[in-house]
Image (tube, rainbow, N blue to C red; front, side, top):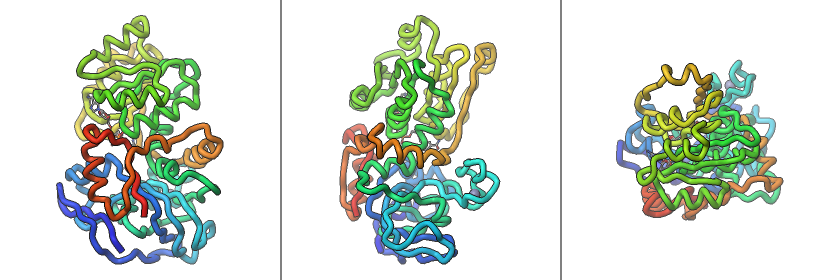
Length: 345
Ligand code: NAD
Ligand code: ZN
């Protein structure tokens, strides 16, 4: 089969590789029908995630059809259409029992990281019963690919940890696929005002189409001054960081109102300066975390009922064999006006 493998920092290729086989009775082999590329894959390619070793197949998002199941798999059979979760979980360990699948003792985020991932013709999914979801009849498969990672991330780490409530004024910093997923899922809770902050005017335009009430362009406007102006000097109820750099975390500390929440979603590679001397007296909660995908069943229901349409995040489509071109487009997202790219097998 063919797979997209990481070779060394800055180097990847679409190569011939052995088809995965059942290694444990709980494994499921899935034939990929659609997959995508995540910002995290770009981080890996830069060499920012040293746990990824040369030869690793990348990718942790996708949908497919069950090819083969291990003897202990009860929920799936060959031919079933499935959604692959970016987080693998046994469903039995102490952390899984409290739905903290991100910290499963025999799983977590391992796909395209510690084991071969979904940017391939076939993938082995450990603990298939708990790590795959049946695809509802007639569902939009492109929209479903957004449920592997970005939609649960936005909902769990941004919206739920941030405790977005009806009427709230919220600010989202970073209008990438993850920030856009925060924007879409925050609307389940009817916030009164949603301010999207980014430097890319095209992404801010898209954010307005997807429900942002206000946008602020970093670089030409001062986000802190603008937010204070908009909120009569009070700040926002929830500030959600979806970039992963110190300056955007700092904006959150400066715009959060008394009693408010800072929900950090971005993956940080460097320390941030925490202004506890200013925040303590304001009764601020700060949260952060790795997505568990425990909201996937709920997101599947909202997709089916038409309450949310994550398919609108898809801007480009390629054949799976054209994945190197897709990386070129996704890697130059601002220039190419790309949000999510879909690869069709
Ligand atoms: P992305 O790079 O596509 O988007 C980031 C956005 O931030 C871009 O639109 C960019 O223009 C904007 N930006 C960059 N610097 C900025 C600045 N100084 N001020 C304002 N805007 C700025 O990334 P993404 O795929 O949307 O992911 C966002 C973050 O979420 C990343 O750090 C990613 O690693 C992280 N993430 C976290 C989890 C989790 O479980 N916590 C899961 C998936 C992704
Ligand atoms: Zn577990």
